[in-house]
Amino acid sequence: MQEIRRNLPVDEQLAILERGVVDLVTRDDLRRKLERSRETGEPLRVKLGADPTRPDLHLGHAVILRKMRQFQDLGHKVIMLIGDFTAMIGDPSGKSKTRPPLTLEETRANARSYLDQCKLVLRDDPEVLEIRYNGEWLEPMGYADVIRLASRYTVARIMERDDFKKRFEGGVPIAVHELLYPLTQGYDSVALRSDVELGGTDQLFNNLVGRALQRDDGQEPQVVMTLPLLVGLDGVEKMSKSLGNYIGLTDEPHLMFAGLMKVPDPLLENYLTLLTDLPRERTLELLAGHPVAAHRELAREVVAWLHPDADPGAAEARFRSVAKGGIPENIPTVTVPASELNPEGKISMARLAVLAGFEPSLGAARKLIQNRGLRLDGEPYLEPQGTLTLEGGGAVIQKGKDRFARLVPGS
Ligand code: TYR
Image: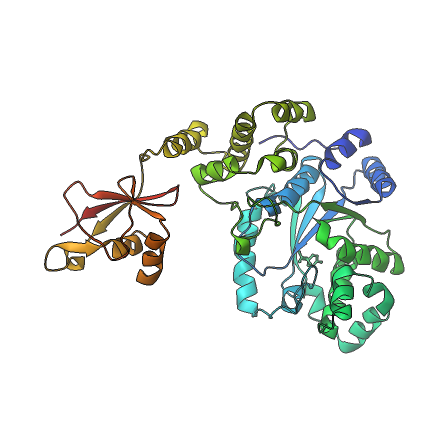
């Protein structure tokens, strides 16, 4: 792992930190804080908050985590703030309706998986990583404290926020606790004395509230830095698990490679800037050349970054053989017990797809076949009710482009 480079000249730090950034409030404040940190040797405290409302991260999250990592690489301290308390309120940012609340157990389990995945990108070193939970200061607050917090901001300013305005004007209910969310997030910055807060562009409003509350509290206001929301593989919507247009942070190397080869051409520049360290000149050179070469370099860079221990050529080799219609080596083997066979020694293809873990139920498996999503030994398989006799060598079934299983008869 690269050494931490502390106390670089401020201009060099700014050049690294400003890459890919959308909003920076304000650049002068950041410069001043970096200058002071160089004089005192005191690192900046850089906050990123996350409500553990879902367990899996994707490349969209990686964009912001990379920025956190850049701060760490320069010797600054990043604070991963887990919003175990705020997750119960639910951030209304960008939402058109009230979110259902989560239980404490759900948020705890999500938080564990979340932190494990963050460490794929961040340095797991207490000198540059602090992990905190906002329940620590929010849970003990009493009613009087909450009223005092609420008195520090006006309804007019809260209603300046676009999503609240739209809901209000459209007659869609806004519960009062949702109005408190930005204040709560801002109060976290007061509690943590953060120097910088990072977030996606959807967090600009919330993070500016933090600036105001810190100022009100006599602290120096935090710098607010936002990064673009990565557009997903559909080329339209922001990357999100629920829209299915995502590449997971823990996807296997060959799946990640295949996903990155599918990035729509107009998004290449964005992905190359936000997810690799390639110098600007190299990015421009790639964009001027053939898009397949640009995709390949993007895929190589990202796979090498997130799977540093994997064989760098293997993901690509597997991707190529699958792209040519081949069947890769090293696919999982599933043994089909004799008890699964009917009296004629046959088994339904739908059942095989379930045994291979492609689908959760027979109904879903039949639908997969109906939608032409299943292949048998490389050929499309089109009979939802079809059956098969498993010979000694077994059969290879395939879902979509990249999922395979070899099925062999058991005893
Ligand atoms: N509101 C942020 C989000 O939904 C998460 C967050 C929570 C950020 C608390 C900061 C904070 O103090 O992504």
